[in-house]
Length: 196
Image (cartoon, rainbow, N blue to C red; front, side):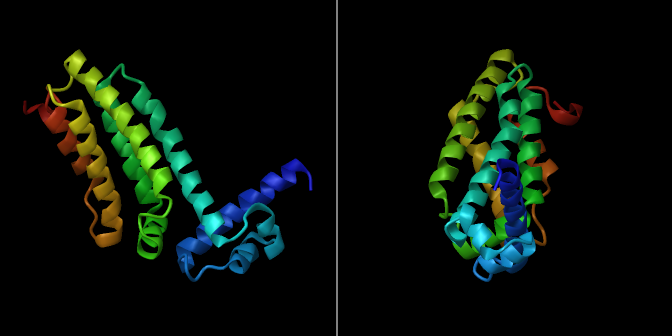
């Protein structure tokens, strides 16, 4: 198998796995179902993944990587902390909404502890960048004087709560724009909507 067809086969497996896991759940999904959806043999899946758990863990890593690629550039740009924080939160919440089926399956069937070390590492990195952004916002006068560590913790907790709402109350999750507005009102010296 040449490298290009190998990459294409793996991509098909990943896309098929996302679809099968989203539709059937983790427990009901099988390698055979994923292979059928990818239009390859079950043996073809085992070339890349040793079992279903290995494939699912790969998906978790991929989604974390995708989210990191989406959010890191925004957090690293400290020229406009207020806008950067707003954009960061919007991107994370949009990403969660786009993948809510996988989030629901993941938490209901595997629990949030599955892949916990990967998640902790990602949250630690994001929190560190948030702290730096908040410090810059305080220094520039865009944000009120708060404890940057505590503010970053609160923001990450709010985001995790937003994500968890897809599991607990999928029919009525909080509005992402309201969550963002509340955080920015708490941090900003210049209140949104011209009321401060």
